[in-house]
Image (cartoon, rainbow, N blue to C red):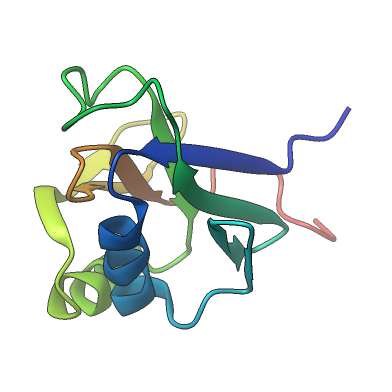
Length: 123
C-alpha cells in the first residue's frame, strides 16, 4: 500500500482554497469542485462535503504533517504568507531530535511542519 492524499471537506471550500493558495502557491489540480496541491509525493485536496458544517470542533483529532529539513525557515515563510499559527517551532527529544510547528486553516484543521523522522532517501 501507499498513502497518497488527504481530503479536507468544508462547508466553504473556496475559503480554504484561497488560504492554501496563499501558503502553497497555485493548485496542482482543480476539477469538479475539488482543488489540490502536491506536496512532495502526496496531495492535500479541499472540497465540499455535505456532512461538514462550520469549524472543526476537534482540531487535534487528525493532524496532517509536512516534512521539511528547515522547519524554522518554512514556518517563517508560511507565517509571513498568512498562516494561522497554533504553536511556533519547538524541539522534540531523542531518539528523534528535531523540530515541529503547528498551524491551522480557517476551518480550524491542524497541520504541522516537522523535521524528517525516518531514514533519508539514499541513506
